[in-house]
Image 1 (spheres, rainbow, N blue to C red):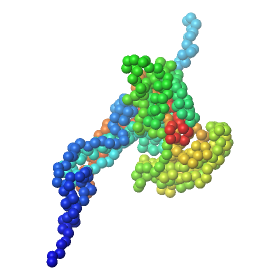
Image 2: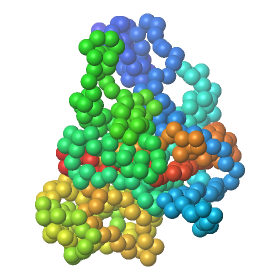
Image 3: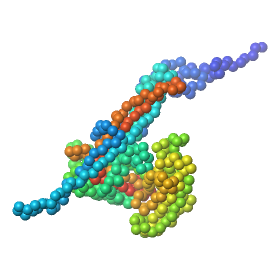
Image 4: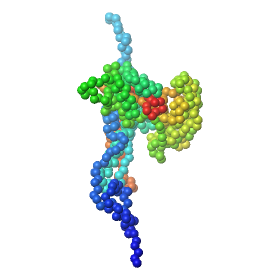
Length: 460
């Protein structure tokens, strides 16, 4: 009597091998058990980009005027005044006082964006769906463009010195910053003044705002606000305009927030903060954070704000954000008081700044409130006057249509691919580089609306 044994073929049983001859829906050859079915594969030869952000989403970088510069420090003069026009009359044959113009020297530091990429020799030889080197170069290009767009809004060289200041920071740093503070109210509550008041500030400073950028979470709030105030005809194409992309203001300018402005995927709200970036190179959390509360005339903690607040502090550097260091207990704050945080640097001391998160009154959830640079002494002090509200959003208004550009993209080195020296690894390494900086030449012709409540935030 013979003995029957199961045939094994390359560690695959006979039953599994027979099963593999059925057509079925074996969609991923990497997961096949028992081999592939004996049917031809229908494989598309193109790469489908299914990323969250595309090149077309970089609205700010794509629309701003590019200016070639020839040095890592770009300098120019700004004329901010020509004299006092109110007192220029004189009597017949009389003299006049000498008028002087006001000039400022502006310096822009070029910053360097670059992404290292590499393709192994084996991958370069594979007859794949697309050329491996070209594919990696495209991916690196998209990554650098996304970084440029993000920093155009959120860059802050005080917090991370290798970043350039974004439009928000440049407006905030300006001598007479146009800041419209809604103190935690929603767009629906504030009404059309959320647009007309910042535009009015810009108009009084000599600008004519015509572009509005905001985080995507505010898009529907803006639509609801404006559609309620604009009347459409009952016939013709206007009757079908269910989405509005512009708004005429009382100051003669029209604010556009359509394809080249409006909701920007890289314009983020102040939300939840978690550890992010390179696990090996991002900084550690601060060693210690202590708090005290005392009265201060600058405080914006009103009677309605008196209560208990929780704080968490994250370290940050060019490689990423650390885990948070929580305050042991909630801080009791009275009206007219401030909260002083003393932040002791991490043991490694590799951070360049901090992200300070706070809760709403008597709340448990903490969200980003403000980012600050680190003090070189090792202990950084921050006073919370309740000026910046956590878990809120911002909008930025820009003047673009002037004889001279109000905003430039100062470009020292355009986007390029730079080969790297091949070491003892069988790979082709290269860098995708872009050396540039955003330059808001007239920040007084721009404005910020801040502390806006949004769905999912702390004040909505």
